[in-house]
Amino acid sequence: MDVLVSHRLKMWGDIHPELGAAVGESKKITRTWIRKRLSEKRLVGFIARTSGGTVAGSGCIWVREEQPRPTSPRLVVPYLMSMYTERRYRRKGVARLVVKSAVKWCTDRKYDRIILHASAEGRPLYLGLGFEPTNEMRLRL
Image (cartoon, rainbow, N blue to C red; front, side, top):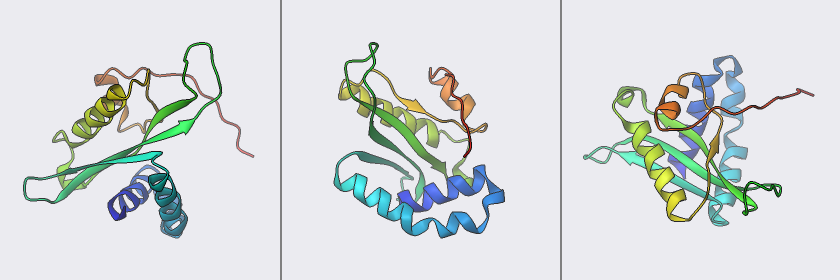
């Protein structure tokens, strides 16, 4: 769990450096959120390690509830999140390994799709693995 929390916070720090201290201040709530979903078996972590055991990267699948829709018979959908690769291991296939492991996990459980929000840096990886861009809009309140 420590790796998943740490990597999620590092991911936010990389994507939004302007958040500064707010990222660190969210550690407690992030830990609580991850712990709860892990215990409910609604979050699965994928951790890539070197042959020497050093953590190189990680990501998670959050199986989240979804509204009914005519295009999918399931009321839950796997959401790929918290993808992070330690700087010294970037561009070495770590993220690709994590994503492929997550996709296999979902395929083995007969899910019909995976969704995610990609950072600009991550977008080429996901496109290269067959993910397709979708439309989403947001209103900040």
